[in-house]
Length: 102
Image (cartoon, rainbow, N blue to C red; front, side, top):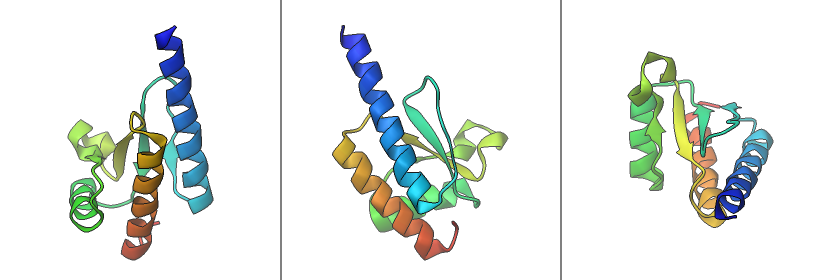
C-alpha cells in the first residue's frame, strides 16, 4: 500500500511542477516513471546550477553531470514536499528571468 501511496504522491508532485513550468513558459521533459524532472535552461548547466545555489539557495543537478546529452538542462527532484517544490520553482523561475535564459 505504501508503494502505491508514494507513486501517487510523486505523480501529484510531477503534475503540479509541470503546471507551474507551463505557466512560466519553461520547457521540460515529463517523466513517466521517475521522481525527477529535466528542465531546459539553454546555457552551461554547471554554471547555472552554481548560480542558482549561490543566488537563490536552490540546489539542482546540472545536466552535464549525466553526460553530454544533459548539457543545457538541469534535473530537479520531485521527492521534496510540495511546499518546498513550489518555493524552489518560484526561485528558479525568478533566476531564469533575471538571467534572460527563458
